[in-house]
Amino acid sequence: MTKKVSIHDHINEISETIEIPDDVPIEAELSRLGYSIGNIDYMVLNDEYTYEIQEYSQDTRSFEVISNVKLPEEVIEAVYYVRIESFDVGDECREHDITEEVRGELRNSGYKMEDFKDLKAIAMYTGTDYGDDCQIDVEGDFYEEDI
Image (cartoon, rainbow, N blue to C red; front, side, top):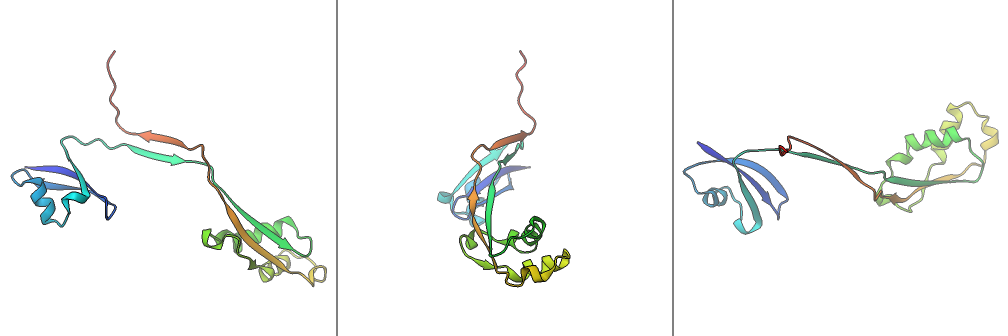
């Protein structure tokens, strides 16, 4: 027979469940497997119940496009999907020249390019507003008291 042992290693941020033979001391087996007893928590699982928790919130990533000429909305949206959406935290407040992407989308959309001959456009990621009203869903086999 074996016993299931759930382990959480605080140093390496590893969690796992292993089986240890009933006749083997838990701490001896964990040491043999390379765990430092002072850096882990463990729990013997007689019965196992797993509960899944999902947290979700509304986060808002913000970007800015600056152009020296008025641009059509659909061109700005297209450039977002082509280039801007890939900006990340490391790009915050860093200007990216998107002139060529804008010119390409204007051409693809059939606009007269002479209206945009002096076009210059830049874009930047301006930050993320993290939602603070998170909601959770918990799923599993819950204890229910008979009343």
